[in-house]
Image 1 (cartoon, one colour):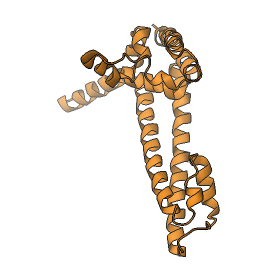
Image 2 (cartoon, one colour):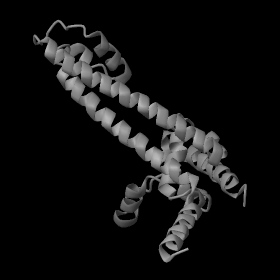
Image 3 (cartoon, one colour):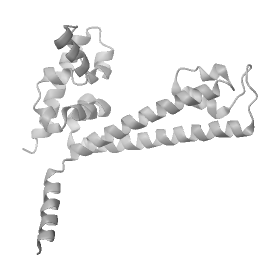
Length: 212
């Protein structure tokens, strides 16, 4: 075996040894975030364009309902006369938004299946989006498992925490876990956040240390 082949073999072994499946979860939540951002921008653009055709339907706040109404292309009472080419352009934009929506759902299913394999307890406790974002913010499942629950509680609130430390602003009570149903619906959100963070800490430790 020559030196080049030996280097390639060692590089391949290093790559295999360094690979972690939680890295795929991190990459996929990035993909989901990018798709969400792209869809939101395109929907906002479609709203602006559709408002000339049907201003009432363009103001429907729920994006899903808005897109369903656009599919009907019902001309509004107050509307600018648009030609077939104009409507076709909006129809193409609508199709692209729906394609991105399908891709996002597919990526999310893939991520959920990966989490069932890698961190089922975290998935059950936090859900797929929050659980994946916690792994992303922590840097890895290992890092998350080694964190105290108090730090898990405020992951994603780094800017607010910085303002608290530097400018003596109010300390944040939660980060990305705020979107969890148990917190968003709780009267005492601080207490609910502490309880959820504690459950997540236990769950992620079970996941990481199960094969250690």
